[in-house]
Structure formats: structure tokens, C-alpha cells
Length: 331
Image (cartoon, rainbow, N blue to C red; front, side, top):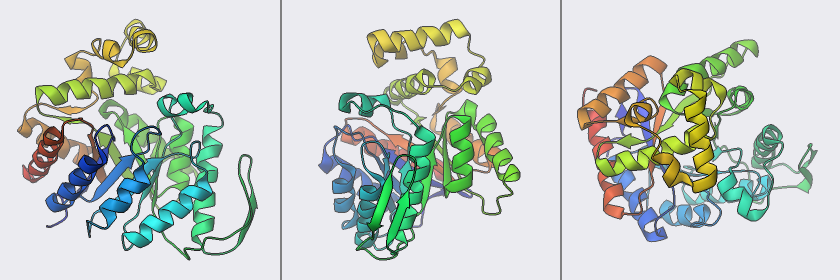
């Protein structure tokens, strides 16, 4: 199968592991069959382990790039570096890691405070790349250290993406990562301005890939899933997103307060269709395809990563196939 693209933009998927491990593997194998370029698996702490699942996927696929969306809080960067090197070898060089700054859903049950996020991400990148050099490393940072550590996996070259929302994290990702992963349609333009400004200010000659993660909702059930995704985005939104959306302080506060007091389902009920359409790709197949075209052309995106999060296998497979078809509409 020819790798899947929408014009010059690659297509990938992020699986939120709310389904069985068997379903995760089935979804990943179908994604490869359809031509998707990346399959990323969220590291959600108390849900199926990404490295175990990705190892199984690696031996059942041959082309698609594979990796976790993980953090430096619940997993020590050195342990993650070795896990990634193992996945890289097992997949014959197809490993890719995306780092996040940690979230309360994972960290709170483990009693881990989300402190020093910029340092955690920066030092995670430095430790991973140091160990992937194959050299013996003694190194000390503000949070982590290595004392004569050396990977038994040898030298590795593994791309690192960083999912970033705050302006300082976006700047750091633009400087250090191989890809800057952004979220929320309305936030793309202001976030990419931060990326471009950071590149100019630091005179960066190696541009990071511009990666956009979004929901593609072309059915009523997926629209409801998208409403939940929007709720998470709004609950942790930087001020520039609220400004781009034109949402009132009162409405945003109501969503956040409802989320805190009654949970995501109740808060999602406050996200109307007009607000949702500013954040996610939704509508008919042709409307979604047109939006994907517009996003790629307007923002020069290198990759679009779609969310796969339903507990129903057939819903997830249909979503994969529909987006693959959309990639061919109007290209």
C-alpha cells in the first residue's frame, strides 16, 4: 500500500487505549494496510501498556512508524530510552517517540506532582539522545542524572516529537525536537507563530516538523467523542486559545468548573456545535476532506495525526477507512 498523504501532508493516528490490547493491534495493522504513516499509542498509566502493545504490533507490521506518547514523570527517561531502542530494533528502525509534559489523569492517581515540566521534557530529550549515542554517559541535570550509564542497544537515531501547548513549551519544542505537535484548529495559527518566532530568534536552520493532532468527526457518535476531546482542550487551554475562539470568560469558567465538579461528560454538554467546529475537523466526508486540504495548505503541515478512541472496534476501523478515503478526495 502506498503511504497515505493529503497533498504533501502525511497522515497518522494516535490510539487512546480505551479498548483491549487485541483491538489495539488490529487497529494498528489496519492502519498500515490503509497506508497510514505513523501509529502512536498513548501512555495512559492504568490502561494497556504501550511498549508491550507496540512490540506486538512491530512484529505484525513492516512499514508504519510506531511509538508511544509518553512522559518523563511516570517513566524515567533512561528506562524510556532503552524501551525505545528495543522497539527501534524490533521494528527494523521504525520507532518514533512523542513526549508530553504529563497530565492529571495519569499523574494524580500515582501521587506524582506535575512540577518543572519544561525541565522534565528538556532533560528527557537530552538523556534519550545521550543514551542513543551508544557512549558511556555521566551527566547531571536539575531533575535527573546518569552515572556511567551506557545503552546495551548500541547507537540509535530515533525521532522525538513534543506535544506542546504553553508558549514556553512550544518554543522549547521548536528548538530541541524533531517535530512540534500542536492541538486545536483555532490555536494552530497563534501556536505556529510561536514556533516560527522561536526559529528566527534562535537562528534555527533545522526546522521541526509541523504536526497537528485532531479529531475527525463525520458521524453523530464521533461528534460526541469530539465534544469530549474539545472539553479536555478547553479545560487546559492557554489564554491565546480562548482569545482565538472568542469564548467569553464566563463560558470558559463554567466548562472548567463543571469539569472539576461533575466530570468530563457533564462539561462536554456545555460545548456547543459552533465551538466544537472551531476546534476539530467535523462534518460530511467532503467537508472534512476540504478542511484537511485547507489546514495543510494554510499552515504547511507535515503531518496530521487523528484520534482513535472509541471502545468499539468497528467504529475505530470505519473511522480509519473514512479518513483514508478523505485523503484521496480533492488531493
